[in-house]
Amino acid sequence: MAILHTSTGKHHRIPSVTRGRKLDRLMPLVLLVASMVPILTTFGIVITLAADAWRFFAVVPLSEVFSTELAPLRAEPSFGILPLVNGTVLTSLIAMLVAIPVGLGTALYLSEFTSNRVRKIIKPIIEVIAGVPTIVYGYFAYSFVTPLLIKLLPGLGAKNVLSPGLVMGVMIIPIVASLSEDAMNAVQGSLREGAYALGSTRFEVAGKVVMPAAMSGIIASFVLGISRAVGETMIVSIASGSSKRFSFDITQSMQTMTGYIVEFTSGDAASGTTGYYSLYAVGLLLFIFTLILNLVSQAITRRFRLRAG
Amino acid sequence: MADKLQNIQIRTEALSLHYGAFQALKEVDLDIPARRITALIGPSGCGKSTFLKTLNRMNDLIEGVRVSGKVLIDGEDIYDPAVDVPLLRKKIGMVFQKPNPFPMTVYDNIAYGPRIHGIRNRRDLDEIVVRSLKDAALWPEVKDRLKTNALDLSGGQQQRLCIARALAVEPEILLLDESTSALDPASTSKIEDLMTQLKARYTIVMVTHNMQQAARISDWTAVFMLGEVIEYNRTGQLFNQPREQQTEAYLTGRFG
Image 1 (cartoon, each protein chain N blue to C red):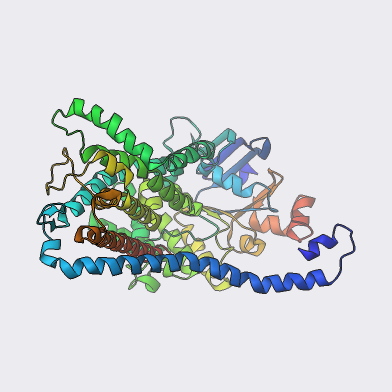
Image 2: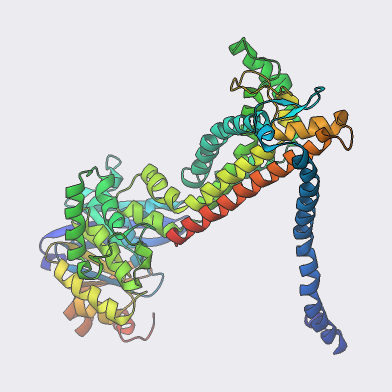
């Protein structure tokens, strides 16, 4: 900076130059502190979760935790987590059944089948969808998609797994589409040229050369989408309800892990009770869930990157 | 000059090409003989690579390119709307400036072309892979490494792999776009030897910046300048007794 000022013609003193050097030495420290904020926060979260979850696991036997009976407010409560895991897995599964094919198709279209001009218009629009607050999606699922689906499936409950699953899938499409498109776009043009020169059609270039070469990024986008689905709260709280029965019937209400936490932090569990500490146990499991997903994503990315050079 | 040529496989007639408003090729008429090596030389930006890419319609992939005039290959106009472009490119192999193997195994690189053209039988594919690698003088070096990633090969090996990959779809013509310019001298000379062997079976058209290379291995040489062919002759004659002053200036390194 100090050097730039001299080019304006003003006479600048040497001291401003030394000040710049000091700043250079100070800056990494400032940035280090900044980078520690998320790391320390994460540690803080883990410690809080683990400490309070411990109080839960000290009282409730593991055999009860891994059971299908969830009734935290009964006179003799039972804290089986499997109904919640089931609700989370089913809603996420439905979401990914929507998000993966549509997102990947969008990415392929943008990267391989359209002009730069069209891509520059469409991609930002898709990315805007990712910015819509999830409460809006939740409301949309409950008051628009569910009634629409009831016309097709008369047995569908007012609260059900199908509708929020589908809407969550739509919410995740931009994540899959945008990241996959980035990955495909990063594949060198020379590979495409090589494939075209061998007599490939556009479809063959996209499917047999570009997609395999971009596989690490594509899979990372899937895993990120799944983490989003697993952690998503608002849509499922609103539209899938709070039934704690263990079933695989996606036309009926189920509660997800996140939904359970929302229900019980909004006042049903008195502080200090086992029910209260169960929130931390569920939170910890959710944390471990997404942590594992992220590690898997990193491992896959690394493996494919080694192979793709 | 055309009267001295026999067995013409590629003929261009008033071939012009525009990138948007810029005219990169100006009514080029050129006859390229079958089973010979024809070198295209000239200063950077003279249109020689652009010309090469009109021969297998790789320019179609660039937005804003317009082509007029004719490119006749075996008498057929390849810019006719009825032409099946992927089939055309199968007939005309191309090797690029930088080696561009696919990020897959050596075997899958070679088998890629035959597979997309419908060969599924494992034994047939094996045979094609071996034959192509032998034809590209790469077999002894990779015969135990067919399952390794092609990106683990050296640059020179990668380029011969790309040649093998092009040969695997049984083309009749081979286009080389400065294909040795990114390689070391030893790899370059291997590929030059390979080309002199391959010309018995393939028509080879090569763009090169290396005039010694053109002099060493080509039979015919065309000199491009500002989108036009200013001189085209047998390589020996063109190098020893250039007709045009500009050719001589370029060959002696006075510009370009």
